[in-house]
Each structure stands twice: as C-alpha cells, then as structure tokens.
Image (cartoon, rainbow, N blue to C red; front, side, top):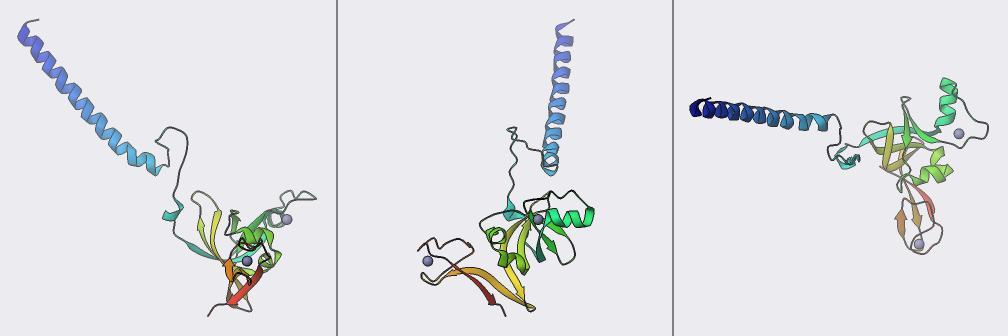
Length: 180
Ligand SMILES: [Zn+2]
Ligand SMILES: [Zn+2]
C-alpha cells in the first residue's frame, strides 16, 4: 500500500467513524426523553422518584368504605372471619380508591364520626395507581358542605390531627363548620 493510499484509507475510516459517533449521539439524545416517557429510571440505582406537586388536584365526593367488605359484596372475594378493615373511598359514581394514611388523612382511620359522614375530598391520585393522597377533607351534612377539623379551645388552635393537642396535650374537639 502506497503512503497516499494509506492516508486516504485512514481519512475514510475517520469519516466513517465520525458519522457513526454522530449517529450514536443522535440516537442517545432521542432515547433520553423516550426513556423518561416510559418511566424508566436513568440514574441506574434502581430508585424511582416522582413529584406529587406536579399532579393536579381532584375533588372526589363519596363515602369511606371497607374495601375488603365492598369487594366481597360486589365480586365475592374472600372475606376472612375476623378481618382488619381496609378503609378506602367510594365515590358517588361508584369508583373505588385506596387512601394513603398520612397526617392529613389520619382522622379517617381513627375517627368513626369522619367515616360516618359523606365526604368531599381534595386529593391527588398517585400516578399509575388508584391510591389517593388526601389534601383536604370536608363533610356533607343535610346537603351543606362543612369544613371538618379539630380544635383545641384551651390554645385556640385548629388542627387536622384527631389526637391530643400538641401544645397543651389536652383532647381536641371534633368540629364541623358549615361553609357558605
Ligand atoms: Zn371491614
Ligand atoms: Zn391545646
């Protein structure tokens, strides 16, 4: 091979490899958004992180039900004799949701008075699930929407927490205040 031919073949090879690199870069760049759209984690550590503040709020109206009992009634699923209630939400149009137990939804799980009411919940439905993250809770009494919260008359503090007042450690009162 002459020197000229050798230089030409090296130049050709460089050109081809440069094109390959360009093609590969374009492929990777276009794959990024696709991977994100597929919800595939790119960090490689196996963790999947999401931001609920990006999810728009929804208002759901309905009642608290025991999902184990409801599913048993509708679909005849197995209901153990002494089951632990699995509280969920059934909307007025018959949709079922699982309620995430948080500071804001705690009252549903511990206060029978809340479970007896028709409720209007402001929620975020967690992506890829039927799990709701409760933001606010209102009740419906005699057709009127009421603000639902707890109140410590000693400290004059309102709270969503049905447990004792964090300030004075006394019991808090269940409050239902009609909203105009
Ligand atoms: Zn039950
Ligand atoms: Zn108090």
